[in-house]
Picture (cartoon, rainbow, N blue to C red):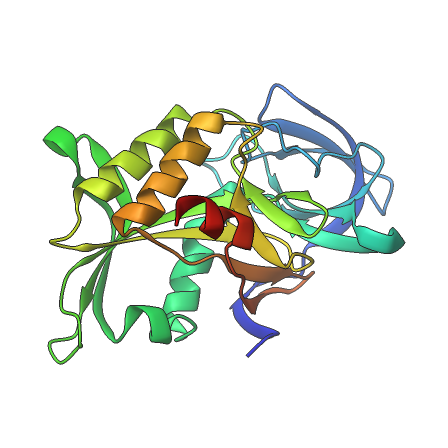
Length: 256
């Protein structure tokens, strides 16, 4: 059901204004109190379309003796269609947790079937040199008892109402597509674009950013890799399930 919370925060996020992002991992934010803090930015990519100095952001206070920074940058408010604004989840370290929570909440039961076991970061592929985000084992009575190799891709870039991945060249992402094709047909291979905003209607590969990935994406579809774009809403106190999104019909037509 849209709007169903799948992750709740122990403490609400704090709001501020983004001053600057620098050295990839750092962001200076001015909180509502006027205090300026430096937050960890877990998103190492270019953050195309979601990086707006002077825009509103939400940060999480995470004090720990093992952390150099006491804050994490989790969300950004970005302009959308028709003058509207949307909150986007930019913390890539949360993507796997979000998708796992959606699986455990039954949001993907129709696609996955009943799951008996979920293992994270399992070695696979050529010489076991890759790691799949999740290896799912179906229950014994499942209609399809093959193991499921499931890869998650954090997705925040958009053009109009279309969600796109990747937003830069990703040799790692290309490799993952090849490895996923390689597990077929003995196992199922599923790619889950974790769409960190709820204002999109469909998903497509980011051909303009990485044409090679786009070609491999279409090859993967043709080979039998399943793609389930999943949409989520980002709030000050929780993350919500906002249903699946279709693959753009233009992409489907191009590989048929």
